[in-house]
Length: 97
Ligand SMILES: Cc1cc2nc3c(=O)[nH]c(=O)nc-3n(C[C@H](O)[C@H](O)[C@H](O)COP(=O)(O)OP(=O)(O)OC[C@H]3O[C@@H](n4cnc5c(N)ncnc54)[C@H](O)[C@@H]3O)c2cc1C
Image (cartoon, rainbow, N blue to C red; front, side, top):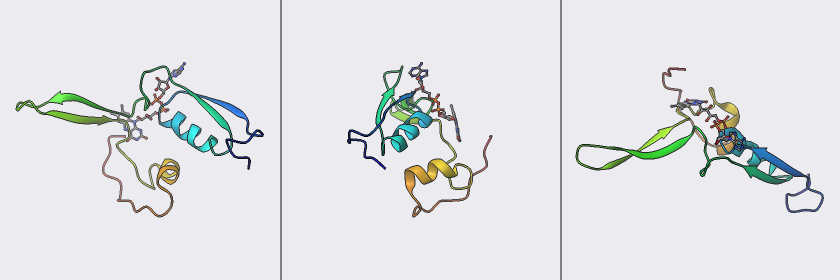
């Protein structure tokens, strides 16, 4: 497989820097020169950490949206991609999905 820095690498465009686009760019980047196009001013798409919640004592809290289920059974491919095969995982919690 050609390396991404080699001249034989294809130039590939990925549109969207959400979980899907970031994963595709990560995998394709092993063999191709990848350009990622993202319309927003941040990456992540629906998966996002905000500091929008302030409790009564004035402290800011981080709130994550997006992936709430992440384990081998429910999200096998992304889990393999990001975490490899040596990562342990817990059984999935009850989900509204
Ligand atoms: C509260 C919540 C909980 C969730 N829980 C789960 C869960 O437990 N498990 C699960 O699998 N999923 C869950 N999801 C859904 C999960 O977040 C989405 O499935 C996932 O983020 C979708 O990723 P995506 O990359 O396909 O799309 P998105 O995250 O929507 O990303 C698309 C990106 O493309 C960009 N874009 C769009 N059009 C263009 C354009 N023309 N040019 C350039 N950029 C563009 C957007 O700005 C965005 O950044 C949840 C979502 C929410 C909101």
